[in-house]
Length: 153
Image (cartoon, rainbow, N blue to C red; front, side, top):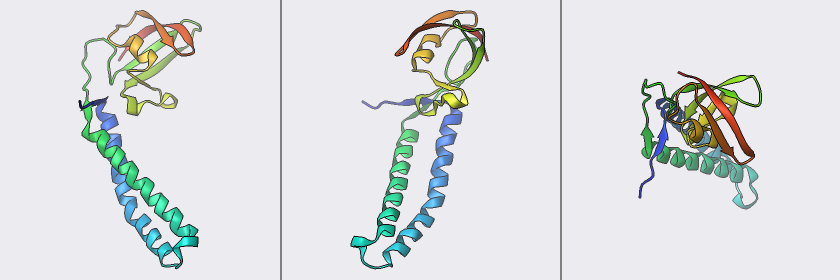
């Protein structure tokens, strides 16, 4: 069974951009490896070992990102007023009076520091397909809490 990874068009583009950066960097890393190999005895050549490891990490990352693109399911947003992938929500957590804004994204794109929450996180699952004005209970590993959806953009 093939599992497709849901993501926003922006998330798909970010992966494509990272692949392009890595491919552009690959020739430089190959030259570093070749220069280190030319130093001689490979058994005690830390420059060679590090260069080989770095190139291996780059190749591995390229393969991983390539699979992410291959199995990506790009989800376009609908203007239906409901929380969904690609939309931005304004939330009010019931334990304080502050509101916070989050973009609902795919699992690979999630980054709380950038205000991006995965649709399949506990918070994401609780608010998906809900409309503004709805209060939901979020069942998180650290405990349950309530959140009100102030706006869906």
